[in-house]
Amino acid sequence: MHINDAVFLEDLCPKFRLRQWRKSIHRFTGKSCIYCGKPSESIDHVLPRSQGGLSTTENCVPACLSCNGDKSDENALYWYRKQKFYDPRRAMAIRAWLEGDLRLALRLLQWANPNFKLKQNYEKDESEYKAA
Ligand SMILES: [Zn+2]
Image (tube, rainbow, N blue to C red; front, side, top):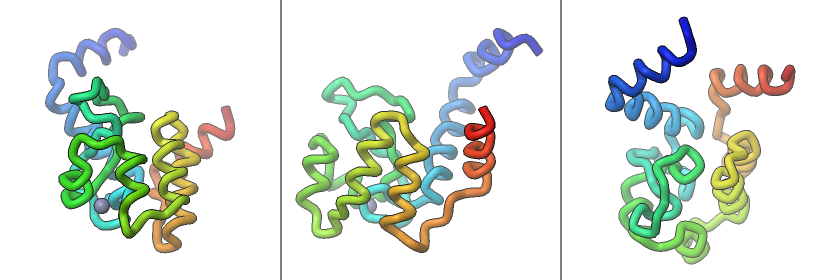
Protein backbone atom coordinates (compact mmCIF):
# COMPACT_ATOMS: atom_id res chain seq x y z
CA MET A 1 0.00 0.00 0.00
CA HIS A 2 1.24 3.41 -0.91
CA ILE A 3 1.85 5.63 2.11
CA ASN A 4 -0.33 8.39 0.70
CA ASP A 5 -3.27 5.97 0.63
CA ALA A 6 -2.95 5.45 4.39
CA VAL A 7 -3.13 9.16 5.03
CA PHE A 8 -6.10 9.39 2.73
CA LEU A 9 -7.93 6.57 4.55
CA GLU A 10 -7.38 8.23 7.91
CA ASP A 11 -8.71 11.49 6.55
CA LEU A 12 -11.81 9.67 5.44
CA CYS A 13 -12.55 8.45 8.97
CA PRO A 14 -11.34 11.12 11.38
CA LYS A 15 -13.58 9.75 14.14
CA PHE A 16 -11.94 6.38 13.96
CA ARG A 17 -8.52 7.97 14.05
CA LEU A 18 -9.49 10.10 17.06
CA ARG A 19 -10.74 7.05 18.95
CA GLN A 20 -7.55 5.10 18.23
CA TRP A 21 -5.45 8.05 19.27
CA ARG A 22 -7.36 8.52 22.54
CA LYS A 23 -6.99 4.82 23.31
CA SER A 24 -3.27 4.93 22.71
CA ILE A 25 -2.86 7.88 25.09
CA HIS A 26 -4.56 5.91 27.88
CA ARG A 27 -2.56 2.81 27.01
CA PHE A 28 0.75 4.63 27.52
CA THR A 29 0.12 5.02 31.25
CA GLY A 30 -1.88 1.82 31.72
CA LYS A 31 -5.04 3.96 32.03
CA SER A 32 -3.82 5.91 35.02
CA CYS A 33 -4.10 9.64 35.57
CA ILE A 34 -0.76 11.34 34.94
CA TYR A 35 -1.36 13.71 37.88
CA CYS A 36 -2.64 11.48 40.68
CA GLY A 37 -2.39 7.89 39.42
CA LYS A 38 -6.12 7.13 39.67
CA PRO A 39 -7.87 5.52 36.68
CA SER A 40 -7.82 7.94 33.76
CA GLU A 41 -11.28 8.60 32.40
CA SER A 42 -10.49 11.55 30.19
CA ILE A 43 -7.86 13.30 28.14
CA ASP A 44 -6.56 16.55 29.54
CA HIS A 45 -5.04 19.35 27.47
CA VAL A 46 -1.93 20.42 29.39
CA LEU A 47 -2.03 23.81 27.72
CA PRO A 48 -5.79 24.48 27.59
CA ARG A 49 -7.39 24.82 24.18
CA SER A 50 -8.62 28.25 25.27
CA GLN A 51 -4.94 29.27 25.44
CA GLY A 52 -4.08 27.86 22.05
CA GLY A 53 -3.23 24.33 23.22
CA LEU A 54 -3.34 21.81 20.41
CA SER A 55 -4.81 18.31 20.40
CA THR A 56 -1.44 16.69 19.87
CA THR A 57 -0.02 13.76 21.82
CA GLU A 58 2.51 16.09 23.46
CA ASN A 59 -0.22 18.36 24.81
CA CYS A 60 -2.71 15.66 25.78
CA VAL A 61 -2.31 13.49 28.86
CA PRO A 62 -4.50 10.83 30.45
CA ALA A 63 -6.28 12.30 33.47
CA CYS A 64 -9.06 11.32 35.83
CA LEU A 65 -12.24 13.38 35.72
CA SER A 66 -11.50 14.91 39.09
CA CYS A 67 -8.09 16.29 38.06
CA ASN A 68 -9.33 17.32 34.65
CA GLY A 69 -12.30 19.20 36.10
CA ASP A 70 -10.37 20.75 38.96
CA LYS A 71 -7.53 21.95 36.76
CA SER A 72 -9.94 23.53 34.30
CA ASP A 73 -8.15 26.27 32.35
CA GLU A 74 -5.14 26.60 34.61
CA ASN A 75 -1.59 25.89 33.52
CA ALA A 76 -1.13 22.20 34.33
CA LEU A 77 2.27 22.39 35.99
CA TYR A 78 1.30 25.41 38.05
CA TRP A 79 -1.97 23.76 39.11
CA TYR A 80 -0.28 20.45 39.83
CA ARG A 81 2.26 22.01 42.21
CA LYS A 82 -0.59 23.11 44.47
CA GLN A 83 -2.14 19.65 44.81
CA LYS A 84 -1.90 17.46 47.90
CA PHE A 85 -0.81 14.52 45.74
CA TYR A 86 1.98 16.53 44.11
CA ASP A 87 4.96 14.35 43.31
CA PRO A 88 8.05 15.94 41.73
CA ARG A 89 8.68 12.77 39.73
CA ARG A 90 5.25 13.08 38.15
CA ALA A 91 5.88 16.77 37.48
CA MET A 92 9.07 15.79 35.66
CA ALA A 93 7.12 13.14 33.77
CA ILE A 94 4.56 15.73 32.65
CA ARG A 95 7.36 18.00 31.46
CA ALA A 96 9.00 15.15 29.55
CA TRP A 97 5.62 14.29 28.02
CA LEU A 98 5.19 17.91 26.87
CA GLU A 99 8.58 17.75 25.22
CA GLY A 100 7.48 14.64 23.35
CA ASP A 101 9.82 12.34 25.29
CA LEU A 102 7.21 9.72 26.17
CA ARG A 103 9.90 7.18 26.95
CA LEU A 104 11.34 9.35 29.71
CA ALA A 105 7.85 10.34 30.89
CA LEU A 106 6.86 6.69 31.34
CA ARG A 107 10.11 5.88 33.16
CA LEU A 108 9.42 8.72 35.61
CA LEU A 109 5.83 7.59 36.11
CA GLN A 110 7.06 4.10 36.81
CA TRP A 111 9.46 5.52 39.37
CA ALA A 112 6.64 7.50 41.02
CA ASN A 113 4.42 4.44 41.16
CA PRO A 114 6.10 1.05 41.65
CA ASN A 115 2.83 -0.69 40.73
CA PHE A 116 2.89 1.00 37.36
CA LYS A 117 3.62 -1.46 34.61
CA LEU A 118 4.85 -0.53 31.19
CA LYS A 119 2.57 -2.01 28.59
CA GLN A 120 3.98 -4.73 26.39
CA ASN A 121 3.16 -2.77 23.28
CA TYR A 122 5.22 0.06 24.53
CA GLU A 123 8.19 -2.13 25.42
CA LYS A 124 8.11 -3.51 21.93
CA ASP A 125 8.22 0.03 20.56
CA GLU A 126 11.11 0.77 22.82
CA SER A 127 13.23 -2.14 21.60
CA GLU A 128 12.57 -1.03 18.05
CA TYR A 129 13.64 2.40 19.07
CA LYS A 130 16.90 1.08 20.52
CA ALA A 131 17.63 -0.94 17.40
CA ALA A 132 17.24 2.12 15.19
ZN1 LIG B 1 -6.16 12.48 38.68
